[in-house]
Length: 375
Ligand code: SF4
Ligand code: SF4
Image 1 (cartoon, rainbow, N blue to C red):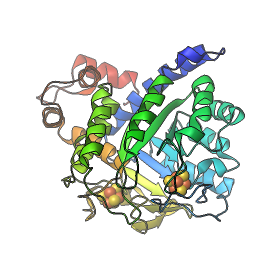
Image 2 (cartoon, protein in one colour; image 1 turned 90 degrees about the horizontal axis):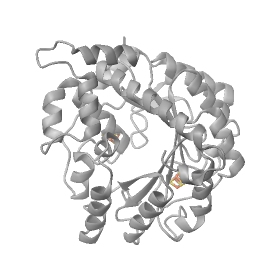
Image 3 (cartoon, rainbow, N blue to C red; image 1 turned 30 degrees about the vertical axis):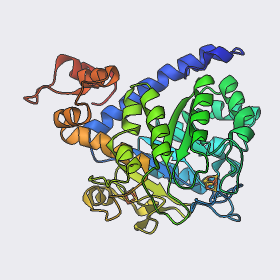
């Protein structure tokens, strides 16, 4: 994270944590490019209850109790057995779970990347320090508008003090996600959120949300203009490219995507009842308990065709699919995604991991594989 301007003695620790994390992320991408037989990313729900009630959301209730900690730890152990690379705790509001730090720590003990998706309301300095100690890698906060309205209270006005604490104390990466779409009243709010995130030294992304009925329409001309402004200003890093890939750009224009969704295999959504679903929008499919989910299930779901794929807005599954497109046909994917030349970070990944056209390993790809423990 680049927020080293707000130091209170934790700056060196932030830098060393960040470097170590980059190495583990590169190892994760390398492993995902090498094999299709493990989940790359899992979202798991430690509590379905939320302290807010955004009108476009269908992923929460206002009464559920937290999942028993022993059961959560057992589910994390099972995900590690399946070879999962990264586990993100979502909800509801995951900070409502009293033992969230213990769960994060267990994820890290298994060598997996640990993330939390939160509305940020329950963050305070103590909570941030506990997440540091637990070894959290990533935290994402969605900020929907500048001032609260009847659609969403995830507002810059309310959350800015929390963002400043994060800038000062967090040793993990922070991503601020703004949104555009028919449920957003003032599209310019996304620009204000992005600028605030940049000023604090955070990474920022913009997502397109459906309305309360689940419908997704093209962005209006002024929304599209703001979307382009945010995307064009983003640094040309691999993570930015993966985020703003063809999927998001097509959705912004109301166009369908042609792709193979690997949910149920490379991406899993594990609900509060411990069942594996394709994603939060396709609960019940396949709906198998995680403790009975096997390598055969992963293999089957890798190629199961999902009829909902064309207008799917689940960005994390798109991003996982991009990695698999590179794994299946890397040279074709590179020319398809980067017709104007490769960004520097992608050139480095190509140099590190891509074998020669005849399939032989280069001296560097062999060395990199050893360095990142892919063999
Ligand atoms: S804060 Fe998140 S989980 Fe809670 S209602 Fe809003 S979108 Fe849903
Ligand atoms: S296409 Fe999208 S909505 Fe459908 S299962 Fe895959 S991730 Fe879920």
